[in-house]
Length: 319
Image 1: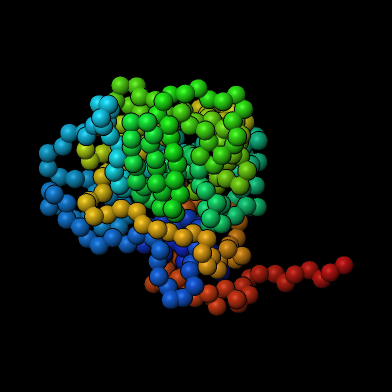
Image 2: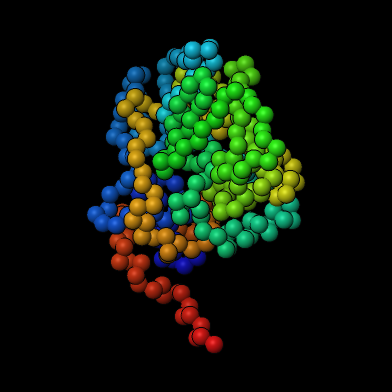
């Protein structure tokens, strides 16, 4: 990926506070005005302030888990990811030794193809889907009713999950978020999803692949008012030799924080300049290993991308 291409990636990362170094090149036309939330410092009820897209562990006594009208844990809230040492965000292999996914030969080929031939789907305003959104570094919001639960994501994207435990269709229409069925097992919400798209989609922000055979089972719990926990089992026999587990924790955002409108496709001037793949991934499992240590304070203006890259080879003459 050429350096200007990487700057397109950096420009998008800067618009969300330099907290997610992914390849989503979404810089907007001037004047530069980030469209994702930039919350001010907010003091929580226990006197601890919180800012940005990541959450902080609350202090003080744990508050009990709220419940809905049927007595189930109410997962409603604005949930911010916790920074967990040694656990890279955006990587569904974060719980595996060396972050190495158990890829089949077809999976290895698909990974190489994704990293060298495809552009990050979210950089083109294509839905990230599942399991990718569970691995994201970005916060999200849940709205729960007794019959249906909605996940609301930062890019004005949503996922609906029915809570009636219905059986899957024999041949469901493939969707980015698949065809989910939610049911309660005690205080655990189990979401069983099949029928996930395999085209124009990555399993995570590192371009790990997924096929139409992917089957995802999520187990969501809210052990107290301030915490949300996920245990997710990913099963894709075409691209992975075995099932593997992904776990994650979030904390409740302070009152006054939440999602706002984010128009992903509007004035997406960087789309034609974005190179393939997620960029270099370091030994810690994080992206951005090839991004310069000193980033510009603001994304480059649109006219920057009108200049040809010095390292871009000249096009071959027409035959």
